[in-house]
Image 1 (cartoon, rainbow, N blue to C red):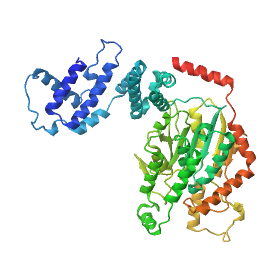
Image 2: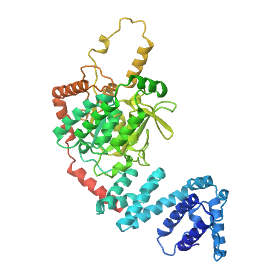
Image 3: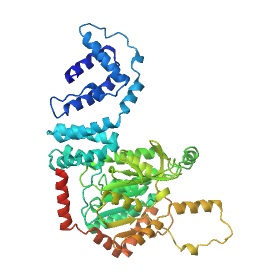
Image 4: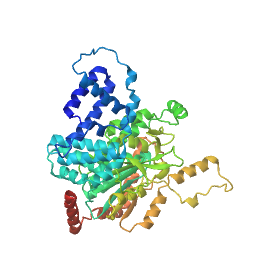
Length: 527
């Protein structure tokens, strides 16, 4: 057994003799793990050897032990610091492999020690450090969230969130709770869901209807809903309203800037880009605009804000055997979930929006890790079904109180059977491709299915009829103003429907449910 103090001195002297700067950093990380293990031991007599923090049989462990023995026997001898070292003594690539190849038992032991250290921390400084370690550990090993729940991490985090006077401790506790899949009960009678379709510049229609709902409820949209889900332009609006708690007026200004600055016609440059990158618009510029609007925050970091709704963005992964939806979340799913959709909470917010809005032909596809993402509207332009699925996983014992699905408008001057082409014998290849795209991006099919399945007074679909057909990259001010006029006309004609929506959203939680919520909260603090 080697005490921490002796190990520190050995490490400092040993690093001065033969180690390069890169190898020193690698050994420092091992020393941090060793110090954590010893500092979190419950008994002063309990010591943890170096063998507990290094992998059995690794070259790193053998070299470290032999070097420490050499140092103990030759500590009085003087050595030349300027003596050139042999870089092949410790190959860096082997150290990287050794640091990753941790056994399951080592990971589980470290998980338990982190929770134990968090429970024993008393000062704000130590609580901050322990919370950061917990968040880093879950981010690196997401499969440990279930074990953390089993050993009582929720109890520790709830106490810090609800009783600590340190704002940073409170915020980091909220993030950690989201990372282990914990959810507070909804504020209303059940879960309130907002789903926003894709549609490019027609998103201005969505903002007009949300403004009217906000004027009737007299509170911000992010306070009205428990879960917000969006695809393509819907994800842009959802991420502004939810994680960043932007007002609808701010969203309107950001959205107009996006459409005016991004969708500028450049026939020569756009044609060149279309041939070389399959994208008419400058994707690098689009990335910069999103970074400026959404900053460099990650999705899970937005969970630090108090009271924000669970927020989702949907993209389509195209480098698999078949198109698959990918869900960007600002929370981490619990280990107990039977997840049907791949997703992550570790990406940056702007990356989630970029992936969800990568419309083919307009912007380049977006690569994150092993996946190639394109516009989620290719697969599911109406994401209401995914929103309901996620809500039932988050709150399995809660009913759906209200589900509002908002479309970006539809242009349909005649019924489909009134538009029969003159030549009934055949259709062109272009027509076939357009029909295929229309069927893939159809939003009304999902609406009709949900309308039949869900109870009356729970599900509402708001999708105005437009006076003309507009492309998703429309940026002419007069056309955008016409879209707004169409939305306002739809609101006037369907005022009764908006009042029904607000009535459903305004149902408060019963006293019985509030009492049950309080008892469950008290139980979570003690179990």
